[in-house]
Length: 262
Image (cartoon, rainbow, N blue to C red; front, side):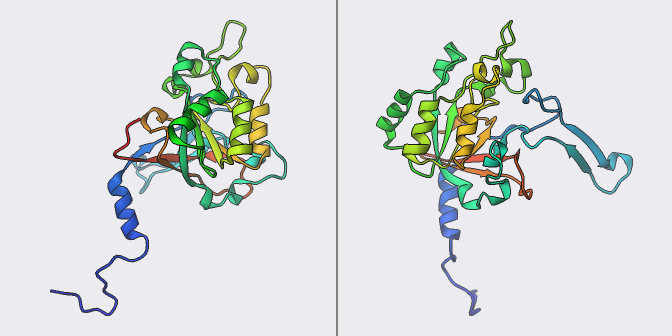
């Protein structure tokens, strides 16, 4: 029996057909760690505290947790104001920046041999030789394999006998290329910091300051970058909207084409 309603149409409206086509062609990959008390974190930050305010096991009608955390907790977003006074806060990053082409720069093999490894312009040139220029407005994630150490705090920090952390990070030359020449919107990485561990151990966070001072944002402590292709996927990065917020846990995932194998 056909629908004779004046509002009936045989063609789905708007973006619904595009959505059906997209989900039929894509695999969803979660790039987010589940956060919890005791997880790896910046050593100056307090640990998470979690309390059951209402608990069905105690006879309450519903469950409610109270979480006490710093904004930079687990897989999280750093907006510009995190390092730059008066810069953009979380509530001023538009949702249009939360769905972006995903570029994965893979240095994991080099990191396996040298935990202090950082990306070079040769890595970018090799990526571009395979896939073309890094797209303007994209999100560039640094794949290091470091997330496999989660949630082992000692393994993530990887300190030597002198207390110096040996963990990978970005390099100044690659960040300058990505932001000043390629025009990317944001970056992300698996390790705790933008800067390599050898730098942060000396109190040097200059690369993170560079990123945020350019009015860009980043995602730290990403997961599962080994499960997405180095080109061709989309990233969706979302977070709550605290007024004036300087950081918050994020939920980040990729939409990867079914027919692309990395």
